[in-house]
Amino acid sequence: MSANEYSVIVVTEEFLSGGTWSRNEYDNPEGPPLQFLQDNASNTTMFQNLSTVDCITAYQNSLVVGRRNILAVTTNRDAGKAMNNTVVRVMSSSPTDVLWDIDPLAWICDDIPGYNSSYLFNTGLKLCDANLVIKSASTWKISNQKIDYCLSEKVSEECKLQFSLNLMIVVISCNVVKMLCLFFTVWKQKQTLVTIGCIAALCITSILLDQGVQSLKQFGQPTSVGALWSMGFGAVNANAILFPGTRSRSTPATLLRSVLLGNLPQVILSFLYLMYNSLYTNMLLAHEWSQFAQVRKALRVTSPTGRQRSTYFLQLPYKYAIPLVISSGLMHWLVSQSIFLAHVTVLTNRGVEDPAADMTTCGYSCIAIIFVIIVGSLMVLAVIATGFRRLDPGIPLASSCSIAISAACHPPQDDVNAAILPVMWGAVEEKNEDVGHCTFTSMEVTPPVKGRLYAGLAGHTSGGKSTAVDLTECSNGGPSWV
Image 1: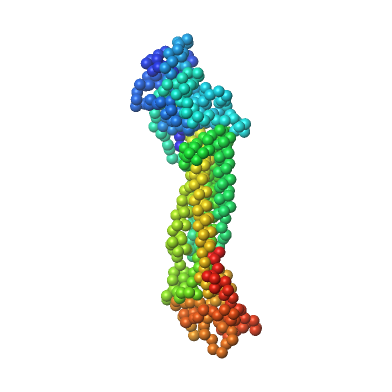
Image 2: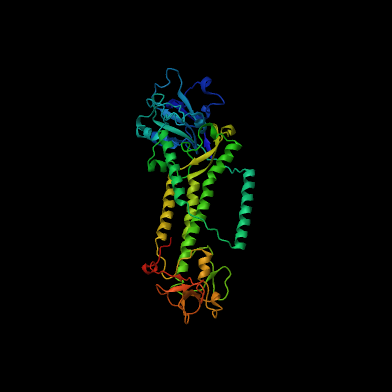
């Protein structure tokens, strides 16, 4: 984005009609274009007449766009009369003032008792609070002169596309590696199982929010929800940057640092999505497993044959996958509005770009961070609520344990096509056997009998030892999903 330096010129009404002013004092290439301002002050296309409230409101953001110089007009005829000068005072404001510990809104609070226009980030001196001045705008003064209205110079907003060739090469290379990993994963069809860390991430986000709010309090800025919203949702604000002072000067090092820091939360969020997806995968795996004791259905496989079912396109059933994808996309967008790269191109009060004054840093938005915490908390509550659902009773849990799954997959010898037919888990009939046998089979099954012994293989007792299936917990409606 671009931001404008601007001059605040306190003038009498005579200045607007061609009154004299000290050219020796103010007419220089580095100063404001006073002659241009005087000649065009009556041009309503170039200048907008603002009340004192509207004037302060329009310039209360230290990064000003769409406006430049201000003529603060006083109707006091005695102002500057002794010096035969219709220009009472000239002040300036620049987005880079924060780099030198100068308040860019010093002109607004110029006549407030006890206010100091110079501040240091570690001294606790407060910045100008424009909202307090607005409350008494009818008596607003600059240089002890009551301001009656302002003429604001309107300019077009300037923006341009900027990119770093080196960073673009890195991004393209990473995307190529990502595509190769995706193709390799699809080819191998391996599933990675991880654990969730969303609660830890929310705690970290809450700490970042607290630090941002404390930083605003340090500079005397209001921290109510309304005040945070007025700072902008994902908008660049000089009072909400991560690297104040000279550390924001635009250099290759600050650009790289800001790009990495601004995108680090996106990487963390991507890993959290994998964890969240894996947790739901495990819960739904247990849910589908438990249903085989109640309903006969075909197996779900990668490459189906016969009456087998294919895997889900998004790994999870659509009623879970679609909300998860939408909420994940929403979180990525909210995080991008919470902390972001901020490169500010500074234009002088004459509209000329000043490369030496450019700033590159990371900005943050407290109101966006609040939304991240809200949406993230809802996602955590959703997975917790899902975990309290009960599984169907009748079959021991196996999760993704291959040994437990293998023990349940020994159908009778004459059930040769069980793998491609709808199956059900239960006890199969065995003649003259004291130890029963439970398995997946396409044949008829009965629920296991509580207290009876069942073996993994028909006709085997594993050296005289058998496994007793305890259905005490299942009789109460099955265990929870987690």
